[in-house]
Image (cartoon, rainbow, N blue to C red; front, side):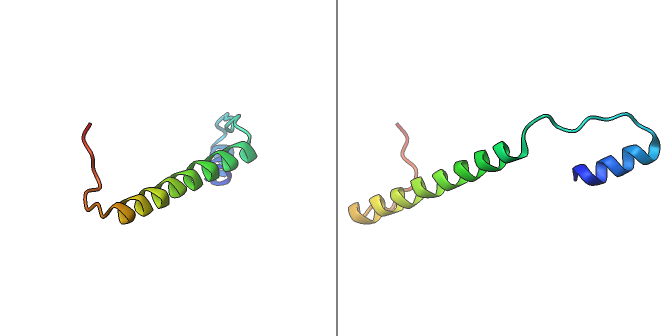
Length: 60
């Protein structure tokens, strides 16, 4: 959407700045976040299956 926003702002003569966050860092950050979430979910499911738990929410 940044490319499209640049075209629109340039076409209207609006001064603009793109995000200062490095693209490679963000890509790695989100990949690791989602990968970690799936690994934790997989282990939680295995834990439930081994113990025969049917409850997915535990209030402490």
